[in-house]
Amino acid sequence: MCDIIWCKNEVDGKDCDTINYLDPYYFWNWEGKIACAGCGAVYYIHMINGFNYKGPEERPGETHDIRPLYADMPYDGYANYRPDTEGRTRPYECMPRSWLTGEADMVKFSIRGRPVRGWRPQPPSAGLAGSFGFNWDIQKLSPEVWEEYQQKLAAGEVRDF
Image (cartoon, rainbow, N blue to C red):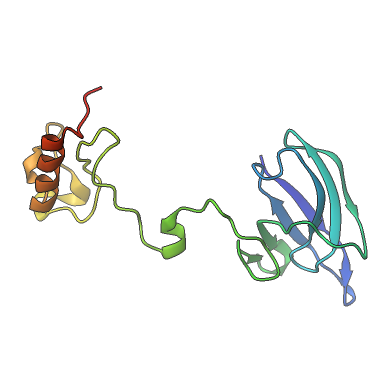
């Protein structure tokens, strides 16, 4: 569930028409003022358990407590303001590293310490997208992963449960 504030404030002779998305985790039980990402209009909302209890009510001339996470303008070719746009939206603190850097996280071992098949880069013997058979041979992994696995075994870091 994601609540929205659709701003219809008039700016320079035309409607703002910005949809401000409020992520449910931050706004689950929240009361305060939020600014529109498009025009900066301030709205008061009171949410209880993820539902609007009161608002949105426009509060001209007041300062905002927080900005929305994401906003878009559907009547403007779906232009948008992504998270952490300076002066428009707030940063999303819980984004995974892969989203921020553009590189996927490389997980070689499961939570139990055993090698997983889906890491990259796979050796050429893995075939298309690491498609080992059901009983895959753990030694077909690259030598550095096999070496690291042997060290984990010796140190007792591999768990059986």
